[in-house]
Image (tube, rainbow, N blue to C red):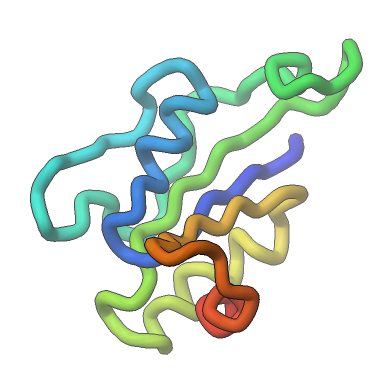
Length: 111
């Protein structure tokens, strides 16, 4: 199994992005101002690696959705993100850049 984790700041569309990539609504989304995802959510089914462009017989993919970072403080963010980061084969970091991507802002957010 190859875990795929999506993380980023609060209310940046992480769950929406995962649902779009998976072509099905596995993760809850909301138009409300507060966070919808709480903790770490694992997709209820393993997905075929071929669905992501891998060769036939590739490992299955386990999609992991993390609650938005920055809402409950750094200690909570580290507590939630560390275990999935350690096992994930791929990590998608979602960062809103209204004035264009800034390498320094993205690196600060990753830190």
